[in-house]
Length: 184
Image (cartoon, rainbow, N blue to C red; front, side):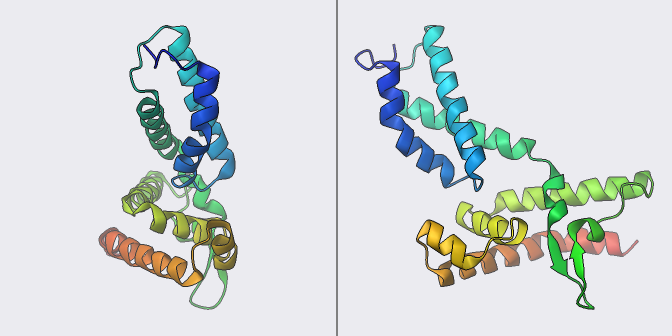
């Protein structure tokens, strides 16, 4: 049974800080971090209520957290990229939406759009956590390196290097799909 000598409220109080830090390192949005933390503890309470045997509570909590993080990233809508802007060849600001085929342009364009967003999401998922977090925070959330450095305690140059490696990976990973669609 769940480490017999520890009550559920003690487990939650003891494990909350470590579990929050674990989730925060993998999830950039603070609201999502808190939601995931609550989901993990709700699952613990439910398991306790149903008298499910849990031999090692800490390991179980971290496994549940990992699963919830995976679920979160699977659920994230590709539309989250819609507000992102980049500079075009002529200096104009382009949204990700401007770079993708319109969903109204017919079934082929809708298919291409969906495939590109899926490939981008997969490519982001392949990045090491630190690189993905910096790339998402800077490129997709529009946060500055100075702000990220102050928040994380990581040197700005280290953050720049992480983003550079992320960009290099994404370019290499997405080049073939780009080439395939530009040949059409």
